Image (tube, rainbow, N blue to C red; front, side, top):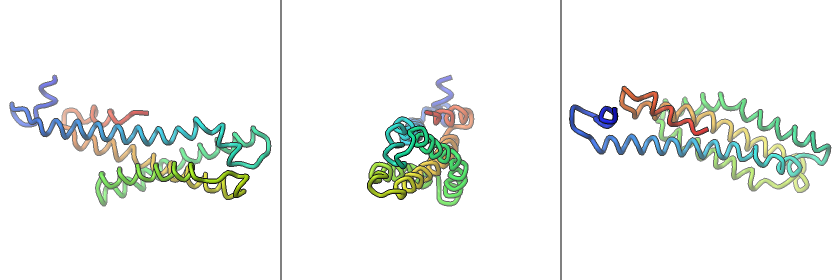
Length: 169
């Protein structure tokens, strides 16, 4: 079975082709891992974000506000899949994937540098919502483009295996 995976043409071993495919799997999986890590870091720290970004009211209401932003981010994923899928189809998968990772990093940076509610008032949760929307769009676009890219670089017999290696979530 291993011989079938690494034989690109005929009976000879094409090391360059194997290296290209392994590199594609590695890069695609790492990009997906970074996207999901940034996305779920918000969830892990929502307990701390809620009192910092939302009005000083009931702590339960603050946590619910943080959860609403988490839900809104998930709702943005299909739109991100469409947006980044269109970019990938018109300008290439590499640009789409790079842009999605950059957008995710930008969203995380916005969250990191946004002042608290005590400093800027209602602008703080608005900026947080914008950052989470950017992250949701990015996450939705990265997964589909990455799975498609990995299936495109795979040999015809192993497309399912290559595209499934993208599921690091």
